[in-house]
Image 1 (cartoon, one colour):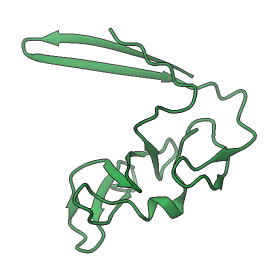
Image 2 (image 1 turned 180 degrees about the vertical axis):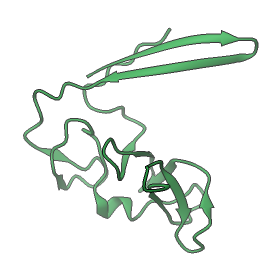
Image 3 (image 1 turned 135 degrees about the vertical axis):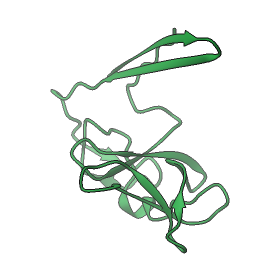
Length: 127
């Protein structure tokens, strides 16, 4: 996997563009949830995805349970507080103290992965 970052500035704003390349030709033989260590279906595109049991324990920083889903039949990722169904205005969540990010998966659905450490094999470049 390779990653690249390009930046451009305009006044006081800095715009970053990130490109991540994943080698899909050699999928892993096994994969484990980065939170609990349970076996998950190997997925070369999402090598550090969190298992569904752990995703169900996702919370906001204040400890309230959150869940993520597609925004519409056309995709997107939205978060909601589980108890109230009100919008959760972030894609970040906490699972057993690990900061994670929810994103729309390539062919629909939601994938949750830890922010740190980066995905296995990731190489970051900064400019």
